[in-house]
Length: 264
Image (cartoon, rainbow, N blue to C red):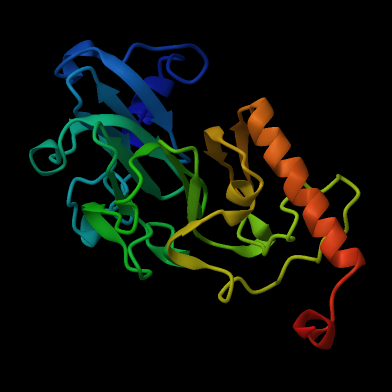
């Protein structure tokens, strides 16, 4: 709700301890979706426009504020001037210091802090205005979730792409076993790396594990250092295919043929 506005309202005993109405006239139309980050808020109206407010650092509000003005908070919702170039927005997600928006046609735009590659733009530079994330053109995106230092996106086909900080396996990009079955809770896992530089992803990467397991994802969320998703139950045919593949892989592991045997 904005640092400056909070300070003003806290003197009256309101705003911090009880719900307070954000003036409806701040928006061009009724709000249909809302997202709260660590220090800022974003909303999408029924007309597809995006409004942001709160603390401005690294360009996370998308208002093209120069760095020497980062200490000034945006204490009222302000439209992000993007719809002319991006088209109407479907949803928006606020992370720690970055923002992601998904358009009605499935394109992803982002702004804010670029550290660890969390913007998915191929580098670590921050962006003061929204820029389109490349590499997602083949599958329209239906949802994006901005975490503390990483981002997860969900496509119409039910696939997840991730990018940003990679330590603690938050991106889900660990190599999958051939059987592509879910590990049990007791499965051993290597300890997280203390340095994330080699694990970070500056561009969207497909989470192969879920695709190989034939798991269709219907929802994805990013936290501070972890991610979670909801998968739809497989159909009988899909489950039968997975079982058949697992049995085949198990048979291949139990009775591998040597190169000499295979040539006979």
